[in-house]
Image (tube, rainbow, N blue to C red; front, side, top):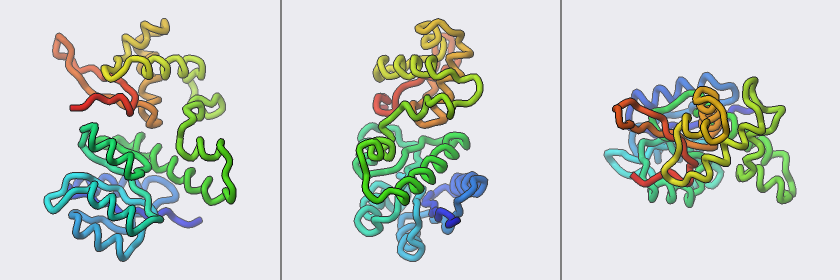
Length: 233
């Protein structure tokens, strides 16, 4: 089986090393190069022509979004995942317009990272099998069918598909403010612990996102919202 070749372009050496370690824990992938600057990244792309680039946005010598568009122009067979601390809506929207496969916020979580690479491998496999597409193929490849996440046969023990759909619907309807586990649980009649389990499952699958906020007592809470509804910061 051909290994999926990855180039990491990240100016923080420790974060780049974490990405390398995470990648090499996952079957089917290999890191062929690590660059710590835009200039070094461009050189590696020219030589290595990887299948996938893990790209940061902020660099001392340039901007990752500018490199994204260069990759789109010059390396059409290379896919891109942005791994960044940038939470600005405009940056996220430009990344989507640039056709990124995924957008992962730092600090990096192994479960979320693993899920992304596994989805990418499955995406490539499906594309390689298709000669002529139909609408279902398009919907699946563009990840527009959220029903995939809740398919009964694919769910881990303790995740009920009906409850999962209720949680998804709640998060989709709360808007940019998001919702915490206790509030979500109250809306469908389950405990905070149960609600949090479903919410974290959705986070790990890239369906929703979670951010920390501090309540009136100063205790940190996780606030959940859809990726498209994340508030501008």
